[in-house]
Length: 543
Image 1 (cartoon, helix red, strand yellow):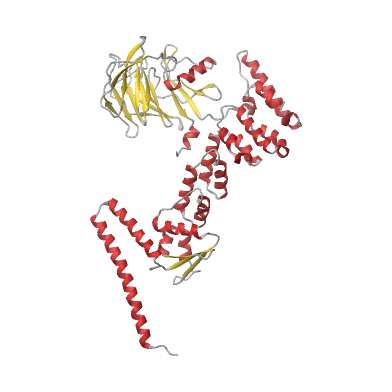
Image 2: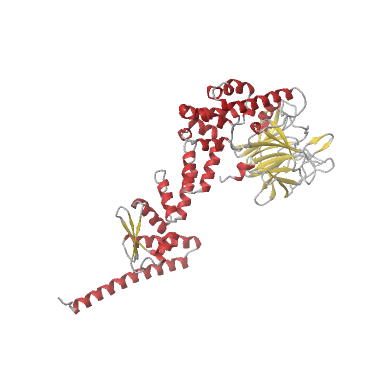
């Protein structure tokens, strides 16, 4: 039967009307968006861009102006606009622009991807938002990586990173390695090393670690443990999960434990005579080496001298370090710096002294990896200058000077702001106070204290900081300063004696160090102590 020319004409007219209607709708939308952008500010313009994408998403849902179809294995199909997907995914850009597919009719099958996940990614291409959950994050990450949705890939990595805890960090580390997300893998491994003891005691994933993986973990210098006893106990927990299949690996794992750092009595009673060790001939060399080192250590402790540090006694990198900077020594100020390793229980000299010269009776404050040395006295001059030492780069630099000269200055940190209070300028004790903004490198005066004072102690409490007078009376006035208020408040509190280094947060710890007889190599009077996280930890932050 031949086609009726009249019917063909009607069809052409109808198609023309539909095309004109859709074109009119699209032009109207564009004119509306353009007009709104012209009459609104920058933020409104951003909102209009979101509105335009939402309008395009509605067109997709209504199957209007779509020029491709994306199909999943389970038979679901999704009409899309090729330009939108291509702008979001290099995978689709290559797919839609290659000669392997017709530009007039693109019908693409995405193998190995469930329709629910595929739809989430298509909606992200239009709306730039997606719901990442603990349930879908692994499948979503692998699919986003496969289809090159880089924004979704980053969101999934961020979700896994923020959900790290002692029970899942090993699983996340293994998964990240499998999908080649190296930064996420490194972050999970750092978390594992930081909280190793908790992971080893609480995580079921720890019990299923391969031998080589466990060995590489306990071999790390950055493993955060207060004592090697905890490492030994973690190895025993792993072996005891499958003793018949794992006990013979004890000797290999012992080689990665710093046995020379174990307490001698603990080593003799819990390691040397343990059935996994005593019954293994391969353990004899490491047992003999450890016994020899521990014996030499006991002998050298009874007289002055040194013993070479073997590999089995090499300290791990501390995650927290105390700094003693400058002070008065041998009748004059010094630039000498020492750090205290809280785990190895020893003081270490720092070679990078301040090139600006020695100073004593200064204040110190810590922000991130930077130690600020504030004010002080060099035997002749009273300083308003401030120096900054970066514990990561080990570089000194000058920062903005204070408005007043201050030695015996009281320093405290509230949030990211350093406060310097009181002090002595060579003529008078001060009641003035000022604060330092490290971002703008600027000091500015704040409300003065109610009394002049120097050589006082300062401490922060929540968002306030308090200052105690270093005097002998049983009860003395104390100024309390609220950064949000104009003037300091007045209180009277029972005075606590100030001993040793004046950084109040370290006092209890350093007193314990003093009782155990661990002292700096030199005597520091008027020195100041600060506490920073290790350079390894600070370099990998971030948070």
